[in-house]
Length: 134
Image 1 (cartoon, rainbow, N blue to C red):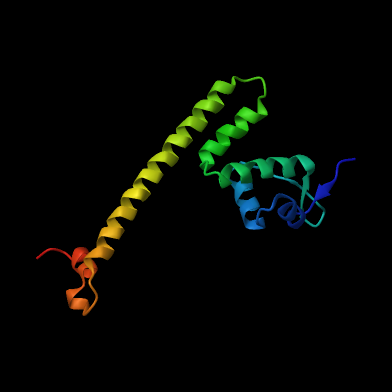
Image 2 (cartoon, one colour; image 1 turned 60 degrees about the vertical axis):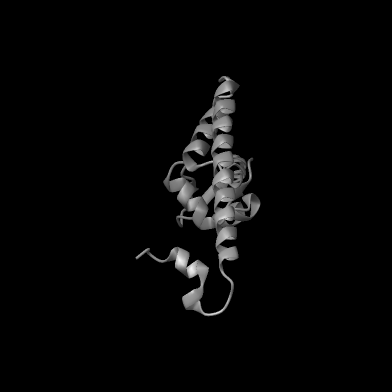
C-alpha cells in the first residue's frame, strides 16, 4: 500500500508551502487529490515526486508555462529529448539577457553614485538625474 500525505506532510516532504501547493492544483500543475470523509486532501508518493520536480524547475527560473511543458515531456517518456533541450536553451537565453540587463542597470547606478558629491539634497546628482528635465 502506498503512503498518503496530508497537505502539511506534502509541504514538508517537498519543501513547498501549502498555499503554493493549492495554487499548483488550481492551475493544473498538480492533479486534484483525493479527499477524506472530512474533506482533507490526501496525496500519494507520486505527488511528492511531481511537486519536487515543479519546485526544482521553478528554483532554476523556469516559468509556469515552461514547467507545464517540462511536465508534459516528463509524462511522455518516449518523446524526443530535443524539445526539452530547445526549451532549456530558450530559458538560458532569457537568463543571459536578464544578466546583460542587470549589468547595464548596475553600470547606470554606479554612474549615478559617482555623480553625487554629498552636501545638500538640492545639489544631489542622483536626485537631479531622476528629476524631470525642465
